[in-house]
Image (cartoon, rainbow, N blue to C red; front, side, top):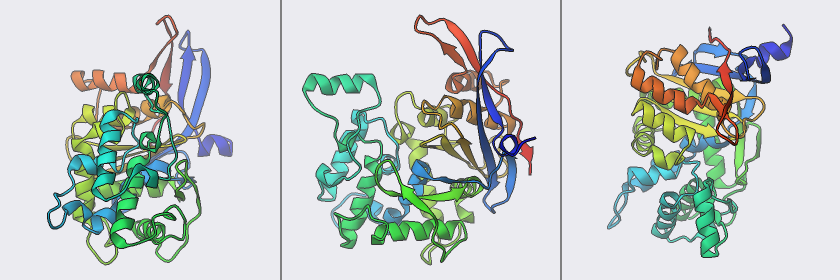
Length: 361
């Protein structure tokens, strides 16, 4: 087997017209880790490093939680679970997202002009059309990363750190986020490679197995190491609960993250990343005796998330978390996997078929 086939095996095939007519093949890798960092299951090379992109958002929220900004102070009410969910989201730019983010900015005496994530059109056609009818242009509020930037600005505001330069790698907040990530992956004192994310923030590179390990801490917060000299069980539990309570705010209507968390009703925490990256935390519960983190990378980037959807549903089935025999859940997961491809007339023209088997490490 060539190195490419071993490192990035075919995970999904698209078969157009017949079972033996393969039109496209989609390669990648899968890592399943426990909270001790042990690789439990895998497909492909899990030591290859990738930019974390939006899978880092739960951990980029930790400074706000560690500083207690979610708890309120004086006459301020605590931040709600919904507020925390939108601050680690990759949202669609729906009103439920933009209005909540605008309110959060106001709470911290900030405006949308402080956001340096850039403007982005809403993801859904109806929201785009609403802007056109109103004669408005997409703004930074519509950017899928505006919640994360709001979280960061709030920390800077309360800490007295510079607002204008919060994107810079050497800004106190970005150094702090880097150090938190390195503490969690057990590499303190090391500088990790970084690049610039789509929203202009630094994004750090880690092996796929390390990303699975990070999400295993969300699945089992009590196993996480101390961060900044403090136990962070409460903080990880809080952010996981916020996402599970408000999956619609983590992404939005029709999205993979929202659909998966709703279907499994509090049994998973799911977070998409750009360029074919996906991560899931599986706490102990039905079908899960060992809390686990799952990380997936699709080598071709998977812009519409079709392949990620097929892969994560298949991983959950192979791990025994969800089965086709569970009729109601199985039917819902079939819809999430979006295995059927239809043409412009609505005719079924092919199917996405997972073709991998997880190997025990």
